[in-house]
Image 1 (cartoon, rainbow, N blue to C red):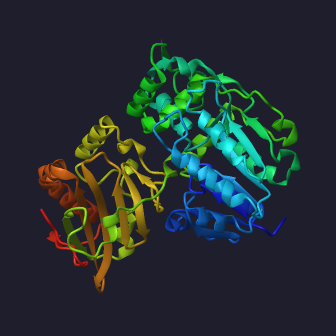
Image 2: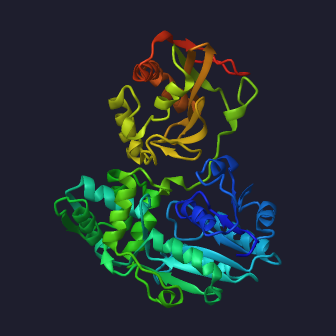
Image 3: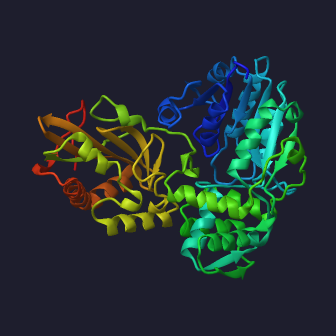
Length: 505
């Protein structure tokens, strides 16, 4: 095995999050680059020998050059999560061009890019993969371009759409795209191709279609899932008049996958995502899992809470500018705050055990019907809603999705900071702090912060303030009750003691 590291860009995404530990297990030295070092360092594989973490951005050419330096190969697993526009946007174009510039004259001997099989239609958003590949392949470093039909595995967006439709909708609409031929491939098979190609000279500078052993339709996949899950056969009502755009909005309402993620998938399926070139099967032979095997394995991982990575993991972690401010008044406007605290005869670990379980199937401890209502309002407004859930029921990492929140900071057993991804006229954060105050006594505090945008933001904050007070007090009481420990004081209001923080109503 060569000593030069392999660079992985997009290591916290769905594929990258699974690729890195397998590269390490195979004996490769791995370098990962991301905009948030904290997000990378929170991954379960972050402390494994042979891993190097560097902070950088594909839009920052200098940081990208430093990341590329000394590496033998690079995986380019960077994908924009846009609104499904057909044209390659300037951000994607700039990122790919930066990769070419950073690679020219470097130690890289190949770039490996995973995209999608696209149709012949020039207006298909799936052509973005081909356009990115064209840019990546225009430099001096040869490109290996894998084009996947559709990837199935626990946590993939396609699998989650299929799972929700089969599990929760015995009767469902079947749009035209659901009856087009597709050739799904297991994430395990995809990872095998990505890893073993490193040692194959026959894959250098080549483009390959990768797919599983079956050509099916998405409607058939739903029925296969139902069969494996021991559900009754699903009733599918043909609705050929539903466009891909309308289908994406429908999926947004009935599954956790938002429309901007669902639309490229729907468009992908609507053109018939079938391999036109199967050379890779002879060059890198492996046992290809069929759809039943793939679905069964994915269901087992979900059941045993062993989902390594999810479609929700992708995307940049961008803390608001006001998160760490020193002035009482934020330059962008006032920060509205409300905090409550409670003191228990318990250790921080005993309290953290219940705080870290918040959200997902466990719920939000108090006012659950209001949380559900807020989730549906968010869904109607185009947001993520509570259905997004969480990847693991008892463990949180920086960057994890938590219903309609995103984990910004997590430091067991003392601190949890969440950033709202709800559709609101402003930016909101929710913070939990657990601190020992006296021997055998611990204080749990909960702080809500909100930066309103204009008059609508102020109206939103003040109109819901009484509800927030009621819910936050109830949450602390219920968490305290769940610990089974004695409440010594509270819940009571408090004013944050951090510099410049004041509780405003």
